[in-house]
Amino acid sequence: MKAVLPRQPLNEGIRKVLAGRHHDPFDVLGCHRQGTQWHIRALLPGTAEAEVVIDGKNKPMERLPDTDFFTFEIAQKALPDYQLRWRPGQGEWRQGEDPYRFGPTTGDLDLHLFAEGRHEHIYHILGAHCCEHEGVGGVRFATWAPNARRVSVVGDFNQWHGLSHPMRSRGLSGVWELFIPGLDAGEKYKFEVCDATGKLCLKADPYGNRFEMRPATAAIVCPPSAFQWTDQQWLEQRAHWDWQHAPISIYEFHPGSWRRDGEGGFLNFRDMARQLADYVSQLGFTHVELLPIMEHPLDDSWGYQTTGYFAPSQRFGSPDDFRYFVDLMHQRDIGVILDWVPAHFPRDAHALAR
Image (cartoon, rainbow, N blue to C red; front, side):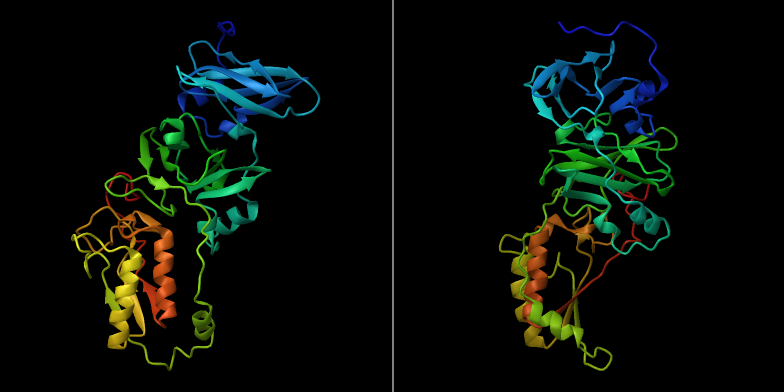
């Protein structure tokens, strides 16, 4: 049986982390120097026992009584290079990097431009993105919740437990971020938000690039796309196109009802592209305009109650399926216009209206 620390009053920082009310969990978790000692602290909900791995040696961590908070102390001059090793419940041992030993992933310039409303590529910052950070592969998460007391990333990887991965607050910017090492594309996730009143709610990521098939509402971490575009000639022609004087004829359509497959289901973007390109070419249209294809909860709608503003709806296929749609249209000399409707907030609990 592992030794535990003697009962003693918890300091305020640890108490807030355990209660899920700490605005800056990095102030408590991770590795911190105190005098000649380095203190490694981890909150591991549902964990039976935990260890620190240093120089290939497993060293047991001490559990604070009646909590899932673990600590380890080591005396050395340099910051120790370590990993965490833990056994959840009756499960097998796992090992990985400590998310709370990594620095921020969002630069000060990005935060400055975002605060001024001048960041033109904020979708590269917010959301979930596979990356390498400080030499380690994983996924960086970021969202904007200026009035929240706490925001956590939850998913299958942590049993949807809000205390497992509380995020770093980036101060007055309202941005919360966290790099989780070892995660990869395909993970489902949401944000657990503790609002200003202390109420907890689960929110879908408005910057997610892919979502589960309805009625499920979790976002899915996307890998960097390997899609091979073949529309360079069309793009070069567009760069020199005198659109103010050229004839334009736009075919507007609703992807959910334009046509169905042989079983009455929705067409995939790829099948839709081939059929639509033939149809509009015969009629002489120069462009197609799609009613909202961004993720939305209700099939029987025009798609205006958007929940995933940067994700083509899963009911029509994957992001690469939509890339194929655009690419084929351009190959057929047809421009693509999207009806993007960020102002329509549905009242669904996972969305942004509440």
